[in-house]
Amino acid sequence: MLRKNIRITYLLLVGMALLLVACGESDGASCQVTFPEKISVEGNKFVDNNGRQVILNGINVVNKSKEENYLFKGGPEFYANLKKWGFNSIRFIIIWDGLEPEPGVYNEEYLKEIDRRIEWAAANDIFVILDMHQDLFGLKYSDGAPNWATLDEGKTHTAGSIWSDAYMLSEAVQTAFDNFWDNQPAPDGVGVQDHYANLWRYIAKRYANNPTVIGYDIMNEPFPGTSAQKATPALLEAYANLVYKLTGELMTEEKLAEVWGDASKRTEALKLLSTKENYAPVIDALYDFNHEFESVHLQAMYQKVSQAIREVDQQTVLFLEHSYFSNTGVKSSIERVSLVDGTPDPLVAYAPHGYDLVTDTEDAAAANSERVAFIYERIKEKGQQLGMPVWLGEWGAYYSHSEGIVPVARYAVSLIEENLFGNAYWSYDPGTENLSYFQKALLRPYPAYTCGELLSYHYEHENARFRMEWQENENVNSPTMVYVPFLSKLKEVSSYKIEKTDNSDAGWIVIPANNKNSKRELILQF
Image 1 (cartoon, rainbow, N blue to C red):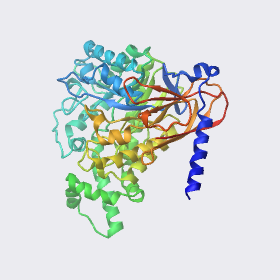
Image 2 (cartoon, rainbow, N blue to C red; image 1 turned 90 degrees about the vertical axis):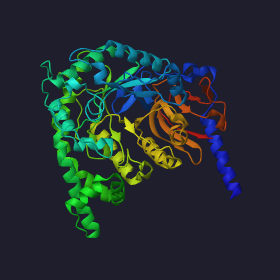
Image 3 (tube, rainbow, N blue to C red; image 1 turned 60 degrees about the horizontal axis):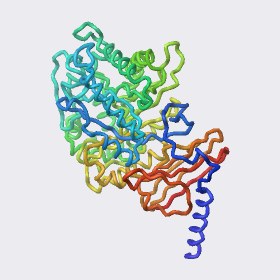
Image 4 (tube, one colour; image 1 turned 135 degrees about the vertical axis):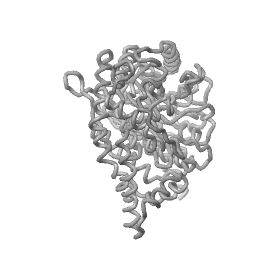
């Protein structure tokens, strides 16, 4: 057995040596570290200006505090650190209240501060997707819309044991969303949704020719409004039917309300939904009303905003999110937006969020693998149906700092790799880089820029082994670039080019283009 293992290791090393040849003079520019100048969309892939397929590996950068002007405090050194940690993109949160404090009046000082941060990102080869963020619609209840745009009609606001419970409990939040979808007039007589579209036009005009800003995430987690009141009864009925089917128990409305109204009891109840077979029929109970919202109200808003943007910017990618409910696996009904002439807009990406039902609770480490896999599979299917690249704009939210969250994070990362999703982890807080899940799951080798079509890649944390396969494109002359966070651990088998990042153990492995339409493989052992 020992002799067999030695032989396998020898063949592996020889294979890597044959692939990772030294960069000679004839390789020229194809052997140099070549960061993109611009990133766009081609079919269902993100591509750079050199024709390479791009994996967007990012993180959310956010400050929701009005007192701190909605600006993350990190300066140029923060963006330099992001580069060291292997992030080539960020989802940068912008807040409507900060941008348009009065109807039709735009905050130039806030925009100038955003400009500065975009410049810091550019200086570190980091691309920016601007996300117009909201939670519970607006500032009055959390963050997002200014108070003048929050048309809640004086309804009662009710919170819950988890912050997001207010979506389902608060008449005020639901009414504010209703009036947004219905484009009811703001105090100046202009429809509140029209204000939103006009704001996006203003932003797009500002960044239309800025190659660092590659995308506009039009709205964070769009919520239906009062129609969401149908969701809770539908879920409870589906759950009760499942309980009866599996156990024969008839759950009363009072018992269901007691179980699902308490965070700890809810977590216990979720154990019944730990398989795809049990979870799907319950979550699918939300499909009909979610379909109606997305296909009517959400799609119309996306079309209005996209046309406003395209009046001033025809080259930046539009990122379309599904509804709030689709975060947990409800099938989405959004579609590609159209240009003014009715033809499909080619520069659109699908920007779902993927969260297990225990997110935002103290039981985040109990995230269920089958449920998470089910949610990601639904996302993959929707991306394929749309024919768009998939960018997981939010996932994770691992506020638990314990070692127990590491397997959960690694599993989610493995699904992101398996499905070739772009992603932005939610979210960065000062000191995140020192936490176990960051060091042992997020920080890993990955193929940022591939000369051809990326077929697969995966980093095995347990075996410290990275492997990728791709179909080389003979018409692309820029190198494949693989980010490595710990170059000192790399077991060298050849003199392939390594480019270190300043003041870091991280850097890039550069594989020159071979100008052939051939299948290639890279294996790295650490």
